[in-house]
Length: 341
Image 1 (cartoon, rainbow, N blue to C red):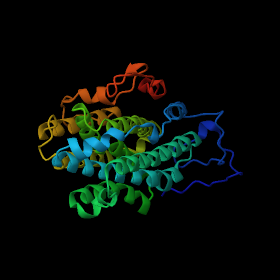
Image 2 (cartoon, rainbow, N blue to C red):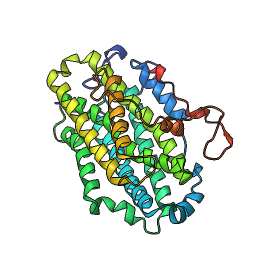
Image 3 (cartoon, rainbow, N blue to C red):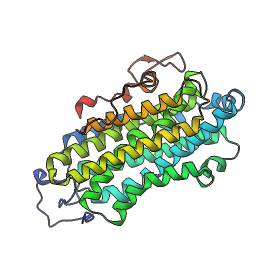
């Protein structure tokens, strides 16, 4: 069983080289002049440089688009996609602080998990700005999970693994929760993200797409965080990565792919130009393969990316022409070099 770390532990003599991701014996002091997991501190600095705020994004035009330029099918899909994104960032804000970080005994990793939780809360504010911009009755979107059983089914499935860790905090369940976080950050967000980018590609809901770009950039750092947690644990605690666990991880990915494909098809209903059922299915499978190989596991689907244009829509580059506004915008604070991790 895992035990929560002590907030203040003055009697320990743990050296920096003795630090562990979990199961360590830290003092509780953030001594950041001595670092064991350099990747964590590098990521902390990237996350700081990525700081942004929802009110930087102009949502004025989205109001007109939503009520005058979206079809009923597009509006319904937008509402459902937004409602599901709201759930996931709400879940993560609490999950990281209450369910993951209490067991982490490396201060540099504590640091980035606190930062991630802040960013998840910021995303919740972002969605509130989006909802307020387009909805005359915000409860319609915030309460949608109570009425839409497909949405509730997805939410329940996502929360299940986190609940296992909460009820039974074992080392194995912690590792499973790391994979669950990788799946959440790397698969479950993407039907919603891609749908909103598809609207923007048709010159609609550009403010929403810009907000999602900021959010997705954060999610990529979160994905990097859990990829590195998993890969570090594979080196330090190889005993935990049994065949039984790996088989369960593959099953988790298969279930996530099935769930996300079903969700993507459900919100688009085959009526969104440029986002067919076949494209959604292939894209989600491509993402799953990418996430698996990043932690040293085998691909399940062996498919290519069918919508490479999404990468261009989501990417921030220094001194790049903003494709939404046609103006030059400096996004230097948004750079993320994955080679550093």
